[in-house]
Image (cartoon, rainbow, N blue to C red; front, side, top):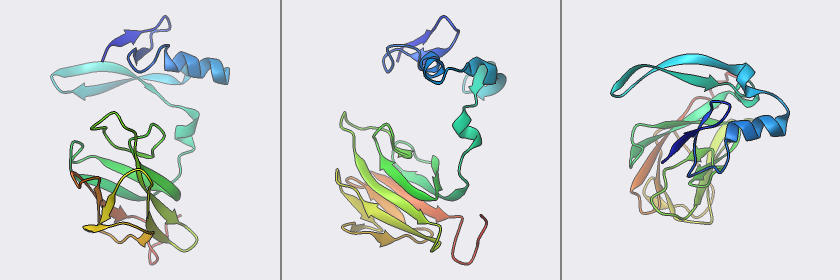
Length: 174
């Protein structure tokens, strides 16, 4: 990873981006993201009192309420969690995945989708087309309902994701 600083003082990885993505976003939207940036001190490993810019984008203020979570209980991202929202939440290594998993190879996979149906207040897991997914140890071949504590095994089950709902049939928050 090679971190660069553009002329507008934004930091970006030049191995992933040819030009500064923040400047590119500003040009596309015709706005200045600089106006929405504020200083924020974040304690990091081996570095204390480091000041970083925190960029609040328009989409952050319009975020949908949380409906549940997936938590990685085994794999490279063990301990990390992802918020699930109403509607389709894609799980994979593709750039646009809602639950973006670390890539173990150069291939992009869309493993499955976790869907929260707000009308019927239920969660479903739907298999993807790219790779195998296991639901509680059983190969997922068709949509299945998800219950609290269910485990999704990704690929050869090196990665395990545990499901926890927030919105349920008996608990309505939104």
